[in-house]
Amino acid sequence: MQMSFLPKIDRRATQKRVEEALETARIYKQIGFVRREMKNTSVYEARYHDATNKTIDAAADRAVWNVDKEEEIRMFTERVERAVNRLGKKERKRNYSVAGI
Image 1: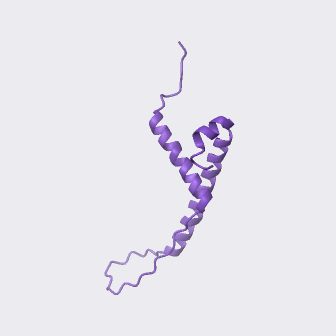
Image 2 (image 1 turned 90 degrees about the vertical axis):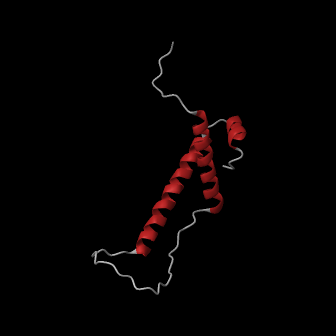
Image 3 (image 1 turned 30 degrees about the vertical axis):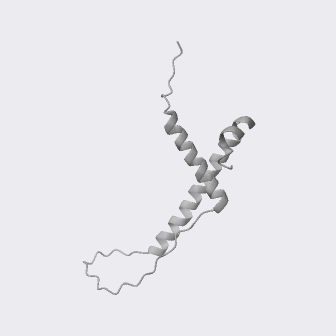
């Protein structure tokens, strides 16, 4: 009997996560990153609230989110591509041809 220190793998959950990763990478490669934009909507109601001495810079928050998220997705896509490229030709064609990577 062989000892194993690796936990049991839930094949269905693993397959689902792999398929989601491949789909995310495929969409990013086809479409690119879709940036969030500012919503500038006029509000004609009085806003009553206490002073919080907190400043809000929604434009800066949105810009930082766009840059961080785009870099995160780009790095994720590169990791997925490296993982797929490590597979043999038969495995790559059989298992991941649907993903389009």
